Image (cartoon, rainbow, N blue to C red; front, side, top):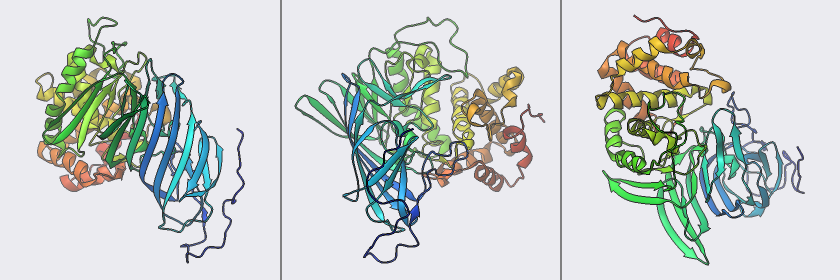
Length: 484
């Protein structure tokens, strides 16, 4: 790949500085945050505090343009640092109001400020850019990332999607607040995370400004542009914004972890079922709060867009995105909402320190489904455990979900064997202690990045039991664990 170098400082070059001790010899920040699965995701040397995106999107040309301001704190003396940013053309880049040199290669934007940064310095990077964001094509899950739709765009995916539409420290370990001001042609809506702060129309463009104060992992930032029915309401002190594309029609049932509804037609309107499932969100949050502790955010809601080949849902913070196909079946429509709202505790508030711990996200959200179905009188958690234990195919047991590898990161076993791990823990420690573990994990580690070892340590502390054998069997052994 071609690398463009602007005239400026070379990483590691010292310059005269009248600001005193830099806190050590300035060196470049690492090009990755240290995740063994994705070595170049995220970056070292700083922590982001806020992303402020001032953008415009024109569906007629698919061009996204604007300015991103990244406010951060240096965790070392920096001669240069990286941001994750792919594809779009940069027209200007400044650090603290001063033009900075930069290079780009393989999704890494390396920035060399005019003056080195001291350890502890607060600084702001401003990047102006434009272009047509590329959609990620995955052979297993279809399109993700920045998806161009019939009347706009939808941004959704993981693990490293943020870098397709704004410069970021693109790893869950570094969470930050987010403000998105998105200008779209008048008559269209622009939806993002958090609270709607303002809408203004001028010269044929409407700017929608959204503010998410609670820090989030970059991949949890979303954007939806198009014609939507928006329902805004408040329940139990939480503000909801639901956005439904009225052209949404069911796609083939997308969930690989569950059978399709037995008699559902191949394509039917699903808007009424989406409305019905979304109407249960306050009830679902109240139910989940009974097990996990208070809901961790101020806002909630959901997005359903008319994307015929979207094959998944994602827990984009405070406003999950759903494939229309999940709502072919009323029960499963509710269940998938339960799953994504459970992620607001496990996955969004309590984040992954590294992607190998993905079962801490998906196993917990899948077990929330079991708890909901039990609550609804449809099937007990034990019945759901037994069905999987007896009927899962041999390959299901070959995935060691505590460290599944990138190829199996979103394998059905990560979800369902993860839920089975929690149910096995429940059977060993008892319902009362199990409930304490779930709530303590969600509340004591809120806003933090976590590991499997930390969860095991908490379970052992609260139960007073040594649980190595249980977790070794269910998380790290590629075979079906024995019962009893």
